[in-house]
Image 1 (spheres, rainbow, N blue to C red):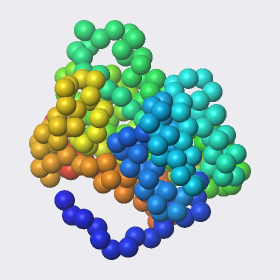
Image 2 (cartoon, rainbow, N blue to C red):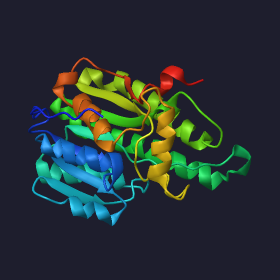
Image 3 (tube, rainbow, N blue to C red):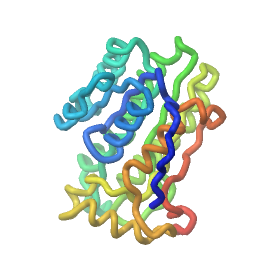
Amino acid sequence: MTVIKHALPNEVEGKVALVTGAASGIGKAIALLLHARGAKVVAEDRNPAVEELARPGLVPLVADITEDGAAERAVGLAVEQFGRLDILVNNAGIIINKLVIDMTREDWERIQAVNATAAFLHCREAVKAMMPNKAGAIVNIASYASYFAFPTIAAYTASKGALAQLTRTLALEVIGHGIRVNAVGVGDVVTNILNDVVDDGPAFLAQHGEAAPIGRAAQPEEIAEVVAFLASDRASFIVGSVVMADGGMTVTAG
């Protein structure tokens, strides 16, 4: 992996960001990188470990993003603490590995609630806060599973497909207000998302990532770099895109 050693610009300096699923993995890497690049950040997660991120300019919020009022509370906290909201990153996500015939309705609806519905609710409330400022950026964490599939991940692929289409449609609705909506189509990233599915989630993802043309899985910080770019004014002409950061997986899948 190439290590970037030169100084990077404070590309989101002065902006206010809200990041969901920020207690670990990709979300934590995003929250910390945005903060390091000059943003004020609200880091939201149901896991109380998110409180460990607390520092000047980075406020943790322990909340279940699927609950009624959670999105309103998160956006409201950003405005209350920092005066505005400029960036939303819908990162929180979960997965289940079951064949459709073995999946319960509760299994299905739980995946949709976290990966799609909560993202919709946070987008809706974020747009309300951004519109008066005629500016903003929303970055949704989608997946190569937004387009490709393999057995046992129907609920996940459906939710990530929905997130990709939410990204495109909302982008058309709000670009006239100066708000850009994009997504990152991530591949295998070494995180804990599979810990409830396999014995060692990070090790499984690291091994599974070897099937990508690049020959490895990503580290969370690599995805955070893409998010920081899309959230910044440097990406001012990118609207409604799902930017693939999957090591080439979608080039060969199918």
